[in-house]
Length: 73
Figure 1: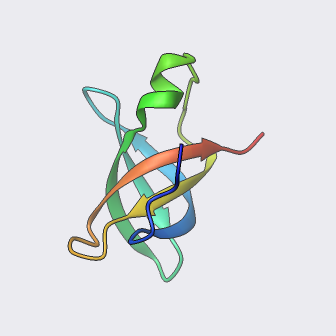
Figure 2 (figure 1 turned 180 degrees about the horizontal axis):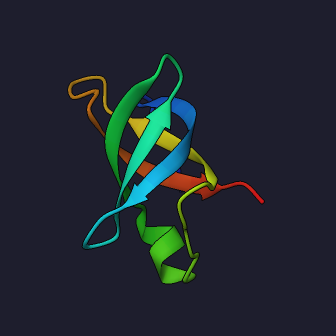
């Protein structure tokens, strides 16, 4: 599946788990964003807990929301 070209990929740490598989993630520069779990991670039942390092894709149009695409071990 081809990767979207117009996304910004950043790394961050999950600070809070919210309802409906949404998370508050602290990224570089002490910014906090609202992120949801991507479809492939949801399909494979990848569990995310506060404190996990994650990779987040941000849209260039709204830098306050993102999609979690990878969880580091």
